[in-house]
Length: 117
Image 1: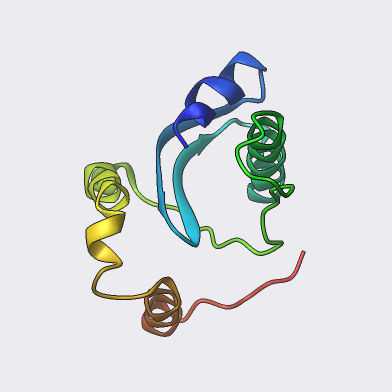
Image 2: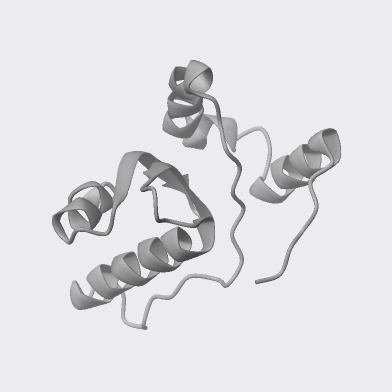
């Protein structure tokens, strides 16, 4: 998944991809948005560019595509190292909790609401 690191900046999309890792059913990306970027546009670019690249490589027999939903939160610069470390340890982390369990805990703990595009 680290191909996003080089894919997006070279094409001048205005997104700095700091760190990427994932697990079998999801992906975490730590990104810094450009001044004219929205979360919605950024996710559209990341999903679109990565799907295009993945499908061009013919890595799986069927066409790869992302689900429609995504979850985004902003983080302070003071916790960037903690976030990178969390993203780095996805395999160990999800050996204890599924993505859905983790998602439900975060939504409840911080009182997040779901918005539809």
